[in-house]
Figure 1 (cartoon, rainbow over the protein chains, first blue to last red):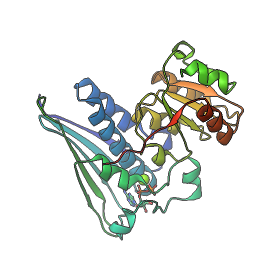
Figure 2 (figure 1 turned 30 degrees about the vertical axis):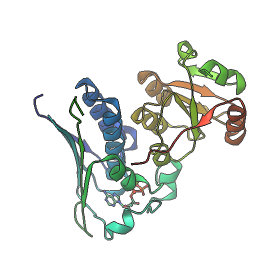
Figure 3 (figure 1 turned 180 degrees about the horizontal axis):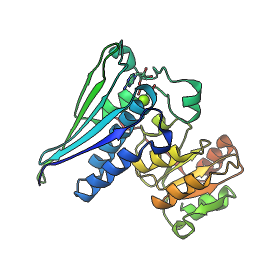
Length: 144
Length: 118
Ligand SMILES: Nc1ncnc2c1ncn2[C@@H]1O[C@H](COP(=O)(O)OP(=O)(O)O)[C@@H](O)[C@H]1O
Ligand SMILES: [Mg+2]
């Protein structure tokens, strides 16, 4: 399989397009014939990352890379960053406003969901800095 | 149970996917927070929810849920229905509240969906 690299711009507070990048990424992975449970994990992780950029950041980009053995999704934004990453990673922790909650988001399960769906999960951030989330899901070999 | 049974038991209206009602349904889950939805394992699963907006459809799409029941008679807007059609997701609307809808389906043999564990 050839390496595939696609990126999507994600705009702050653009709820009308929310989920489009993840939906596109899901379709690409499906078309590549990647097993459905792997596609689903990647879709969930990407969707949570996309929503976090829309809700919590000043906008950013999501990059998908697929090569022979893995799917990699990198979500990068322009800040404002996360002060306490271990607090942000806690199930149920959320700074989302009540308006966001009315839309169905802000359960505080996004980062834990991303970690659960990934084989490798890394988050880099600090106050007044970009947040960079890197998620890798390995593709099993046919004889696994 | 199939979608037709769900429709009959909940006295629901079918808004999209009239032709999919013979699809088998094995499990269900009910919630209004989409990140919670994303923690479930779906296998012939329906989602019952009072959250009626395009994000509900997007969320269902991500985990391959292909039928949603909106409760309390909440009608989705055109945008939500279009997105559901695009993704082949069947939409039912019942006048029952979430609690009653779940009770009716549970007592008729539908099971709760499992949470995904790593
Ligand atoms: N990209 C980001 N930029 C800034 N803050 C973030 C970002 N992603 C997550 N956070 C912070 O971490 C918290 C937890 O994130 P998450 O687990 O996805 O829950 P939720 O999005 O439901 O609040 C958020 O409420 C927010 O304070
Ligand atoms: Mg989130």
